[in-house]
Amino acid sequence: MRQIFFDTETTGLSPESGDRIIEIGCVEMVGRRLTGRNLHFYVNPERRSHEDAVKIHGLTDEFLADKPLFAAVADELLDYLAGAEIIIHNAGFDVGFLNEELRRLGRPKFATLVDKITDSLSMAREMFPGKANSLDALCKRLEVDNSNRSLHGALLDAGLLAEVYIRMTRGQNSLVIDAGETSAAQMALDAVDFGALELPVIEANEAEAAAHASMLVDLDKASGGKTVWRLSSELAVA
Image (cartoon, rainbow, N blue to C red; front, top):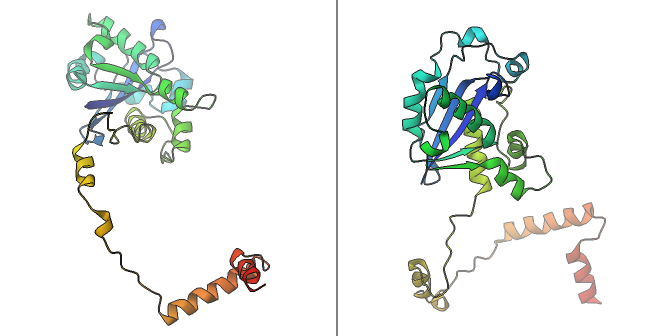
């Protein structure tokens, strides 16, 4: 399965009011392995960014002035995304902007141009109900390093989302044997006679035994004489 983790940065919050996409980041995963075949664009929005938006992504109007228009990158982007499952955190936001950009070009809506859209925010809310499920919150909860995320960036955030998604879905590809079916792995296990195996027993030498005894004495002192093995020994003697 080919999956694309997708993120955008924008001039503001409302595509209906004329806000535009200014950055697009895509990270590809095939068979739950990141391929490194990613895609990234900065886009000239042909309008100024809201001040609050610039504080979030740091992309100034001056920086974006010489970047290509969305129309110039649309074909490459859509060819890259075609046939893939697109995974987006808070998909409604990004898809709303994409639909508006595509409408300007006379193109169909985004959902009709890809195989599937998955909202990782909805997945997180089902997995962690009542908890914060922003990308930063999920990185912290799932131990994904986001220390480089001082500002939002589409490619950086798409990469973080890929790591979060892998951890959120860990175990989905584990072997499940349906009733009435026997897998090749199960047949191989059934063919092994574990009763015929002899496991070696390696005893500690004198130096190792002495070091172990010394460690037990130190632990007993640290616990104030309350270690389980000491009490068990005293009960056995009594």
